[in-house]
Length: 500
Image (cartoon, rainbow, N blue to C red; front, side):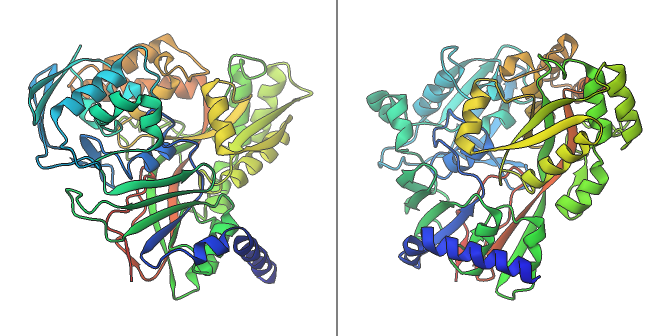
């Protein structure tokens, strides 16, 4: 314990030295968040949920998810399928952009046309793949047409931020994305990559003005530093509390822990295009080598769950109850290594970020140690978020990389990353690709479930990744903070958060 508090003390000194002065000057009416990983962009076209969390402070989708992954109205008040391939959306009236101009159907059509343009590079384009057109019925009604019946269109739209037609056309996409003009609860003030994001309340927000006047999201990648900042009162909420530091928050009356089971599946993905991981026996050896149950207890404090030999969690539509995780079996792992021609082992590495997922570096190090014990001499390479994003775009994440894929309640949303359509896959399977297309092109829920179940079987057999854990989200907050709850999809929902 003395050793722990020594670490916290050192981290606190570091916090004061680097950001203490600026936070000390932060007004009392400012909500301060300690972010575990800072996005390298605030563009709606960029990144995954890490970026989307920042994007949705200013912009909004037609349909949103709440913190439990349930769909709720946003810029569209209601919607219905008028034909199997046509959905009608009734837009919220009286909504204004941050510059005071009205939000209309023209903005929706502009955004959907832009996202679906084959020339557009857009990270979540696949969420609405199959859209063939958007028609304006009137200023407050739009219809979106799809090539085939799309069971996932509405849920997919929750990942598409609606952008202002006039401003974007005037400034160009790149410039418009640098200083957002949205319809959301917060207005852009300043973005300093790798340091902070400052916003101010939108007093004309259709959902009512935010509970706080200002918002600052700070980049605090080190877990001990985040905890120290909370203990020192420099942040009101911190993301991803390290498991070994939970006691330092739980024992203090003025601090609270909030936890929720997330929709993130943490995996170790292989580059199957190159030896040694082009051999499924080597990949299976790594799966047998990792003692997931012990890691869950030691690295995650028993929170979350071991994935059942498949990508999706039990609560996700598409889960296959007949598949179970491979057991920890070091002897089996060594035998598979020898069978594949690697009796003398080989050198490899795991790329990971720090703080992006709970205990991510600790999990990577533990897995590396277990893999080393069966002959795969593994090192861990910790990357900054910006470097990670660059390697991801280049499809060059190294022999093994640790990543979490969000399902947000439906298998389509994380299985997509293993398809050829994603343009981010390292593994390809024709049957898997075909099933994925079929599952998202029918409104028959039984047929969709059957397709996903078979996809889980294929992944279990071919093992493009070691399926580790369904991760929890554990945040820390000051006891005088109300209206806060961590979300399953990791998005920061801060509109109703207040500090007494």
